[in-house]
Image (cartoon, rainbow over all chains, first blue to last red; front, side):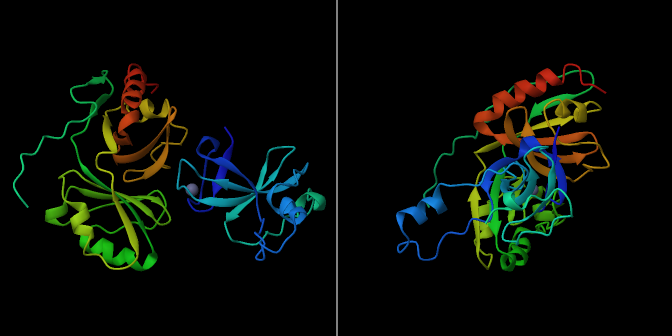
Length: 104
Length: 189
Ligand SMILES: [Zn+2]
């Protein structure tokens, strides 16, 4: 079974306890009423869906219940690292990083 | 308040027994329970009024040592979340009302019910449906965690080396009990 490190439980836990929760680091525009429909569409509906390194939100649903962020390779399904919600994107070890997939 | 005739609480698993030579599986008596979410500034005050120190380390629990709250235990569920269980049916909501700071306490006494799994085959019986590593060095006595048993979410608490408390939602309890009963027929030890 795939083990995922929860940054709040500080332990690797079985994947069954977790849920994927979409792309990470998507900031809601502060001027939401002023932006155009196209800009809203970009923020609200469009996701990168990269092949390779992806920054994702995960939730330790059947554990501590917390949301956190994870860096995962969508090709190998390997978790590169996980970190607490609200933290900036971590520096990744050299090699295997796909800039295009790293999002905006 | 006027004196009312109180109906006795009944559990959803009353009267059921299961197990084998290696493990005993039985429903526990009704208990009072509190789901607590608290900011850091309320933890000390809550711990004081409850008579049990809310644990801050993941997967840990704390048992009360005070005489009047000896049957009380606080389980860490998340960074700001605890499950407090009192097998003496104390009025936990009333006790909590005296605490200071920002927190929420929800009485979940009747939402949950618990099954006590004990004996040499206890760990193996639960491992039949729980994906966590329950070996003694990783899940020691006193360890607790919200996790899964089969298809349901449970809170697992290792009371003693060979004794586990399985807390589950009342509506899931017949499934949980049946699952444990089947796994307990021949625990893989
Ligand atoms: Zn966790």
